[in-house]
Length: 334
Image (cartoon, rainbow, N blue to C red; front, side, top):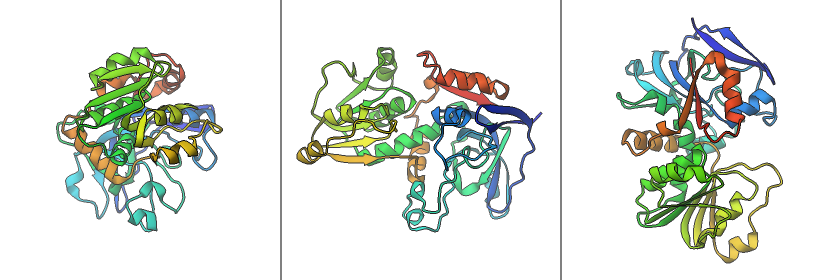
């Protein structure tokens, strides 16, 4: 029986029978293997996602993996049967930013799978085929459901541009932080420090390649070449900047609540820090992620702690917001 989760309005959801939408020209129909849940899905359910960034009623799900079941006109038939993941941003492809490859900055306005367009918390998902990224034949689709958050961090890693032998650090130990450790480790750093608030993440950080773990209340160094910040807490950006040497490179990916302590402009100028930011992932970051995953340099599976059926959507949302350290990534399996 095909089914889908539909959030009618904040706090109201139901499980409905799902009728696959046959792909039109340029589209593909994907049989969903798994859909991840992140904090923004909780926002959609609770009704505190910013205006203009959600459209109800809605089938959520922007992190997913699956297999192509059918394609529309103009799409290579060789895609059918292939394992895939897909970009969420529905970019226009004709504006200045799209032509530059910066699809997350598309000037045509915001549209994204799982927020304004039907998402993957359903048996199937139909979307523009140009958004698909093909996985190796032997790819683990459960692991691949985490490649959307990984791609956001790949964008950060590309901007950080760490070269072998540099001293690098990650601030934040959630899913994004653990991906940042893996991407930076793949670049052969001389040191890889992880700074977080949870000592229970030390072991996992080291498993992924960290050479050292410290909590932010411990004494921290101030001479690192590159820092990727993933925590999004009010003071995470300052903590991250303080780790850098003069002329060091900082990439911010976390989104703190409004009114967070900003970076000190005097400090930025005097220390000549280079600051980059990331929101979402452009196609080059997705391609990089799939390549790194296919090469075995990215292992998302240890981050998955719960797999639930679609019927248990409310329980899954509760788990994600519980703050329980034993809860990592939660997947729904249609």
